[in-house]
Length: 151
Image 1 (cartoon, rainbow, N blue to C red):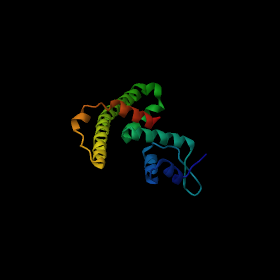
Image 2 (image 1 turned 30 degrees about the vertical axis):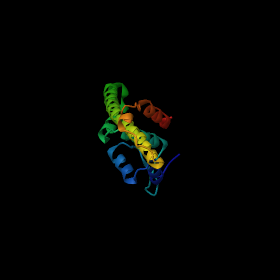
Image 3 (image 1 turned 180 degrees about the vertical axis):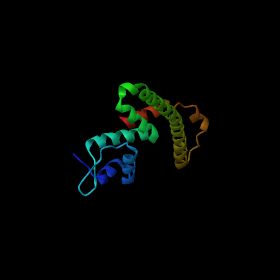
Image 4 (image 1 turned 120 degrees about the vertical axis):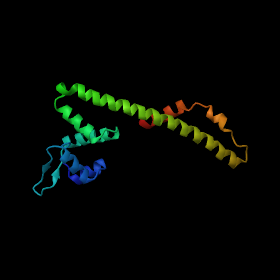
């Protein structure tokens, strides 16, 4: 199956200029042309773009992505470099996730607290005290919510 640049652009949510840029950088290779000169993308390009999108979401720079694809050309020779790049990115992502997770727990705490304030105001009751909520553990609630989202 083949795809036009417009189809690929829509499928991956990237501008056509970005696809041409990836081609110029050598991230997308062997992009054929129709007689009209329009680019023709294949299933191989789909796989490569899925990897690029994944790596970009993981925070990899274009240079890191280029390096990874270069390492892939000769995995046996480059396995140490490939593993080093992936481990480094994994550690960075884990640190960022831990920071985001702590912030998410705090947001859940605030939602709970202000939700109770909202309810008390509507019912004309006494407002809750922050100390009661500050001591509550929101770890399991946060974890359950995240696991539900990714399942």
